[in-house]
Length: 298
Image (cartoon, rainbow, N blue to C red; front, side, top):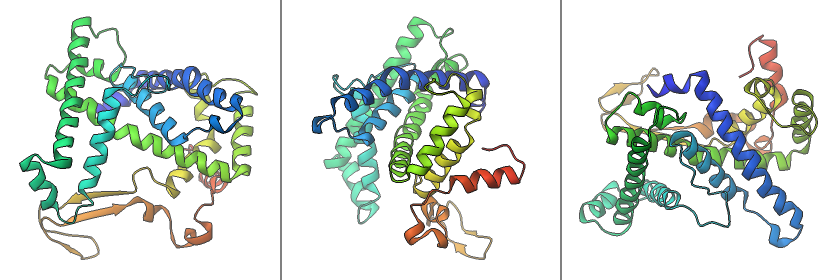
């Protein structure tokens, strides 16, 4: 159901509208104000800014809720704080010497597991309150993901889980991808110049992006983003547990309960990329390869 909704043109247009509005009215003014200060006090943590930006955008897209995290004069919303804490504590589980450590703490409601339980409780409560308020106000005229699901789903717990899943999937991944991209661009001025030249050609000098059609024509920018994510994947590894005994295509036997981890970082960086070439952006080669194959770029 989610994939069908996200594939609709109307949903993509709404996402474009949300992100474009967030960029024009908050992100660019914030960055411009820091540049205008021109002193050490004007130093800005871009990773933190992108995390705030992505949380605002994903909340508006998923919930129709604006936490205003990019308003630096305001404190971080309780929802954002709880999400940060829950994500951090969940990740720490993987770093324990044994899964039994956090499982015992969870049973006894101690330490980090107690904090995690409280954070999740806060997230669920805030999400359910948003759903209740939306039902009270009506949702037929809203464009966000939650409103679309509410038209056909009455189970509030299910609705809550769907939207929270989108928040978890989109918040840190977007922020991580943007941070890596801008760090690489800062170290590759020739790529930055090529991106800007393409934008001037497609959009026009000193003009704003106004449509999805324009964005689809930014082939070099898209290639640069893909190259950045190849070098520094937002999700560097993904783990799954085998439910039943299985055999991989190469004959490797995988027993039930075995943890299998896929490393996107290793898959994206082949042997030739390791070492001095690891940080090299090869966006031009990506564009040329797609054009030679006569395929629609990305």
